[in-house]
Image (cartoon, rainbow, N blue to C red):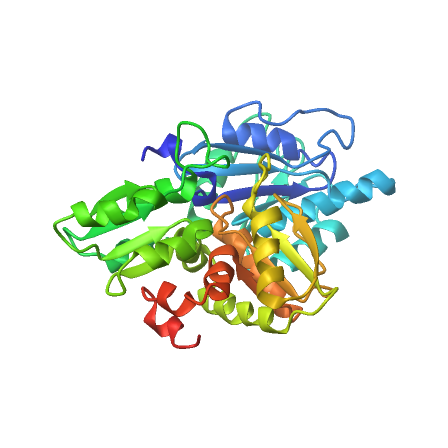
Length: 397
């Protein structure tokens, strides 16, 4: 996979935060070498977070986030500030932009405290060094001028140095040996995008190939025939969550079975927390609130898994009539206390920082949280089998 094709969820997210007219948008343009942000002397020109996937040397593929001013005013301004702070949930490295002619004020100090609480690496950048020199006090502070370019190269190097080390967790490749066979079951229905595979399927295939293993891709109605045609026993069968029950019946018990959703719960989230959270389904009652959350936005088809199939399965499993709420994209709730359970998608379109933030929000508020694949496997009585790639987790089922 080339750097230009690196999925957004696999790129470090660099967020630029600061007050209105602190020179934030000018700094974004200077760092990226592009006119990514609109520059104006009018306060509040940036009204919504703007994201851009791009190459940023010496870091490589990144996502740049330019946010509205954290000191905006009025009712609309308050909403813009909320949008800025929401961007913290996905920020891997924060750039706190301070007007060098003014220095640190309360809004920036409050932001820095939030970053420290989140343990988010941050850099304090004093702008306008061409007209006002500001003394730096620590290694994570720098003075720059977007106008003259002073300090921009050094800032890029500081951003690169602030990047956390690459995690060692893989999707499935760490459980494979060279030459192993994996069968991927990919249903092609109304919800399947025309002419391509969805991101979790693409990433899983790449991870298998990176381990010098082999994979066969088939549809759920061809699984039995596919297994019969293979002259070796697959090490894993991996399927889409919505065909879990059928694939489980068609896959011999001596073949390890799991789903893309479960793999991504481990890859980007907290698999143990998600498995523990699914047990809340046993105590769902009439009118309990259940949140079904997706990390991306897409056109929902008839028979959509999140809005149709999953709620129907929950009602059938529990024999109750809970109330369902749906969110997608960045709409994940800050206050989850009214919910008996949160069921999240696999989170393939979210970066690890945002997925971990959502899990942490639920955990801190004492709200059980699980994901699509785990919930579907549990309600079909096959969760323990579906966790076979993770024996230390399957023991808690």
